[in-house]
Length: 203
Image 1 (cartoon, one colour):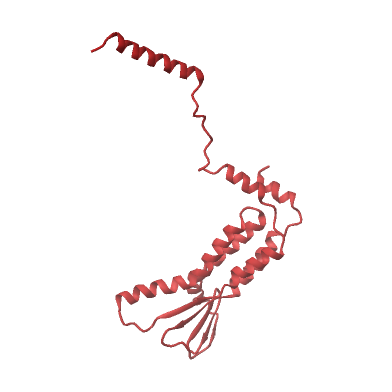
Image 2: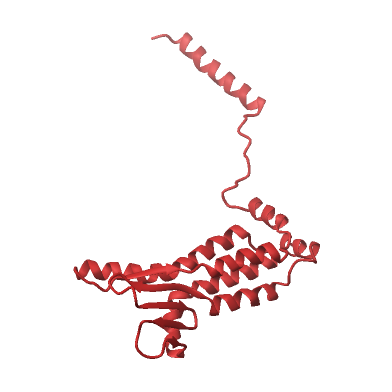
């Protein structure tokens, strides 16, 4: 039995991974991820989520849930699903809270970076462009994950961590660098023979 299975069986009171995954999936799919506005038109805003966009200050329908739009929103927010997977693995005892946090930060940064970086590239090619977006992340997903970890009991992952660390590639087995006494004596005898030969054959 490996360390992961043993850790999970030794802590039967921990939260069911499927239940934790369901809760965080609801947040990932429906909670807003960021607010987008513009430098010269701050009265126009977009609240972006994975399955919807809410427009403020635009003409037309403010609330958009068109499936044709999901390709755009998914491109901006797909790392939220990676965070869901990490939460599932966390409650299975197969990863750590630190790794979940790293993926959570990446998922919350995805929308701003996905919008701002292409804009900067466009501005460098077309100076004077006044269509400059400002994107503010809404870290509801990672905060929900942090609250969940505080409230819902996690499995014991200590044995899994110890096993992983023991199998890490950078931890090589220690090699005894001390020469055996017999080898040292042989080296000394060879050295004496060489020096003796030099003394018998001076230049």
